[in-house]
Image 1 (cartoon, rainbow over the protein chains, first blue to last red):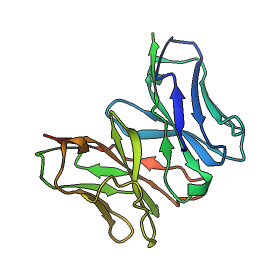
Image 2 (image 1 turned 120 degrees about the horizontal axis):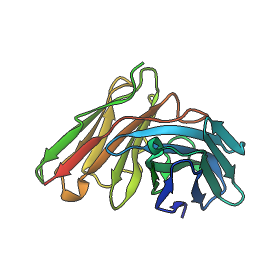
Image 3 (image 1 turned 90 degrees about the horizontal axis):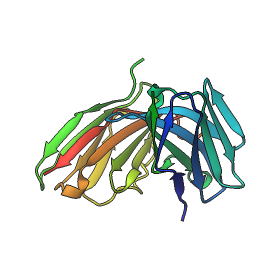
Image 4 (image 1 turned 30 degrees about the horizontal axis):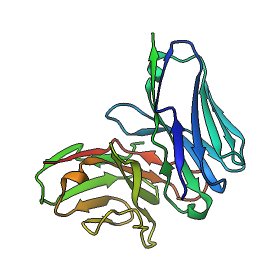
Length: 114
Length: 115
């Protein structure tokens, strides 16, 4: 069964520290992987999308890596700020299912304390 | 341009009643998706539409759930004879096309509470 797992479920760090969020998936045959941010009571905001042929993507303070062989992706957020507090979700589009749906992990709830 | 919009933002209904949830995708986006987010199940796929192709309904949890997309734009998700376990946030997303580099853009969701 194809699964997407995010550990830890929750994380608290002081402002200024780097955040490291993990996502693992059970099948290396992925089409792409996306990281989303969700604020309480809001929808999802796409942060980064990594194609299966890529090893990483960067946007500002965010960097996401992808290692298909080990079934892992990591989202790094440099110099965290209180405004980074949110739930972060990773989502996989499987290669055999590339015509549509995403499969999501359960998310990591992040709190950045001032 | 405008993002994905959904209505209503909140819906409270009684068990056994039917509800309709609406999604307006980003203009020009050909693919539209419905997902459900609940405490016990996380975020799960329900159905997706791509152009005039037959929709992928593989995620619909029961035959009480149905969806349509009119004119390749607006979509309505209908839940008949609602049950308490249907209480969740229903999220809609759209993309320019389902395959390729395009990201899925999500709406704010409809929070459904079945009493």
